[in-house]
Image 1 (cartoon, rainbow, N blue to C red):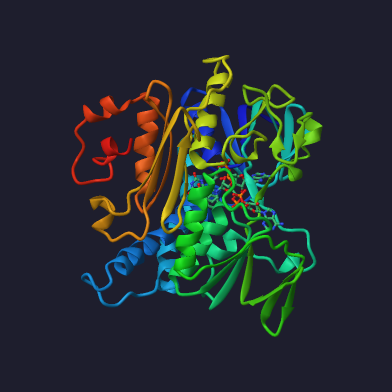
Image 2 (tube, rainbow, N blue to C red):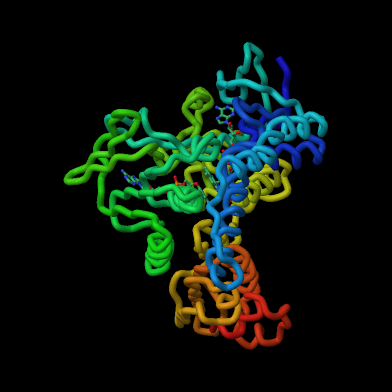
Length: 434
Ligand SMILES: Cc1cc2nc3c(=O)[nH]c(=O)nc-3n(C[C@H](O)[C@H](O)[C@H](O)COP(=O)(O)OP(=O)(O)OC[C@H]3O[C@@H](n4cnc5c(N)ncnc54)[C@H](O)[C@@H]3O)c2cc1C
Ligand SMILES: NC(=O)c1ccc[n+]([C@@H]2O[C@H](COP(=O)([O-])OP(=O)(O)OC[C@H]3O[C@@H](n4cnc5c(N)ncnc54)[C@H](O)[C@@H]3O)[C@@H](O)[C@H]2O)c1
């Protein structure tokens, strides 16, 4: 039986970051992966999604400048961009595994199962470690309805050979909006079916509804307060049924949330407690077995399940294992972005002593590209410092990072006016936003 200082289960952004740092600090480390090395983000999440979004952005710019320099507005060619996407995703697993091996970390392919509090078995071999880090992420959850086997996932979407003429997405969270935005740019008819009338729950409601309106203007069909009861296959099509609702479509995607990958690990044999959101942890990301930590999407905490959060937690847990900290984890501000058309981004406090909410569509930055809608909401505290922001625009993903830094630096209007930003950019508008 081989013994390690640390064994990491799951080779996604969280697990890999944890492994490299422990190894470079002199530990004997192993990583176990049961699928694609690199995990969700580069194989079937953020990165392939954002390659498609590059196509959406290009089309949007041309669409906005129709009769202002462009006459034709092409649709996104699915086959070509999907093949371009594969140039990013195809090398990921081999490259990620290769990097681990090169760093002197043991790479194990297989399905680990705990046999005790400090030992697991993979492919018939047993391994012990002083510490384990569970970083197994999440997988799509499917509605438990008749016909659920007909539902496809975001992973299926990102690898479709052909985009059909008509698709339906059930759910109205991050994934639903992003897939709807991409499919819409290919010319497909897109329906979104959602069980209540709160899309993108957690985001400022007015801004979320404005994004719905913008996508509706592009032809996306939103159906709110529809609780899908069943899906049937008929004559090569799919029929979605709910009370007083029926929709026939070419493919149905479920985007109703994700569930933690904890069930295959025989985790109870290691005395690790879980709930339906994942591994239950304390402020040090330790599970009920204090030698076993959990990071990233698989953790049952309120933090948004995002790649940079997984990396941050990996770095922190390594410091705990290496004895560099005994403080509880403290998260910095976490900006979140929906890569829609336009993009919707938010950070920090949702309300404060003062809120400046401006429609900036006519400002030069957005008028230049003839954006249909740009709106920015800045939240301030009693000392006039920025404490929160919501941005809806094609530039929202970069502007939100700038605003995150401004919040971190507790910037006031006066502080902003003392900066010189490249002009004309969304950053040079900053002093006029509040
Ligand atoms: C469609 C989509 C788009 C996204 N877009 C963004 C975005 O734009 N920005 C952003 O920040 N985040 C985005 N995310 C979220 C992001 O992908 C995750 O937050 C991130 O990948 C979490 O990293 P992780 O290491 O915790 O888990 P994962 O990346 O899921 O990695 C977990 C790894 O563990 C492996 N594993 C699972 N079970 C076992 C087991 N039993 N034994 C061994 N190995 C196992 C998995 O195969 C996987 O490789 C997106 C997610 C999806 C699905
Ligand atoms: N841009 C990004 O950062 C990004 C992009 C994609 C995914 N992600 C991550 O992946 C996670 C999962 O994304 P997601 O969109 O699957 O989850 P989500 O939690 O964002 O959205 C799930 C949606 O499904 C809805 N839903 C639940 N039950 C339903 C039902 N019976 N019928 C219809 N709708 C129902 C919920 O109300 C919610 O709107 C996100 O929370 C996020 O952490 C991030």
